[in-house]
Amino acid sequence: VIFYWIFTALSSLIETLAERKQQEKLRVFQRLWKILVAALSLASLSLLFQLYDLSRSISQRWHYQWFFADGVSHILFCMVLAAIMFLFAPHTNSQRFAYKQVEGDEKGESSQVADDKNVWADEGGLDEEEDDSFWASTHGKGSKPEADILGKQDDESKI
Image (cartoon, rainbow, N blue to C red):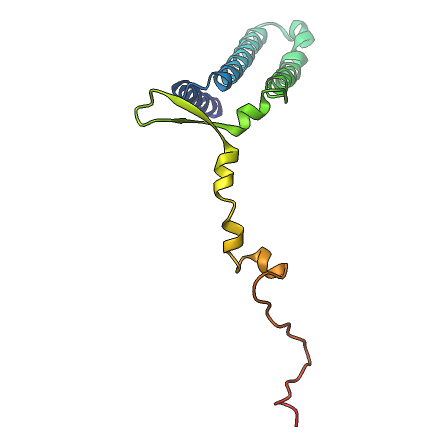
């Protein structure tokens, strides 16, 4: 179930990246797909060999049993982890992957790459407009509520 979910989500992401013509990201996720398929294939082969190994006598199979019971899964995990770390390691194009978005026209024929800097620049005036925000109330901007002091009596309540 987990493998089905992962491969379904990954294939839909690959299709989306292909439609948006984001070739660099597409190559990265296609490599991830290949890594996961190779790991799943090796795990399946290991399982098949374990089933074959059960048909042999215990005096012959104990030599390999520990390796297939514990070793293969740990080795596959380490190999997949190292491959993903290498695949998603920071490099010169990392910021291009993270901070660029593709905007296309209604027909989807042409696409333009836009920086997120422009998007964030449009939102620059939001903080000044909100005087009732938490930041404004805690840092002196906006109205300051009077502090309540326990035991303090108003002048009217004094007898």
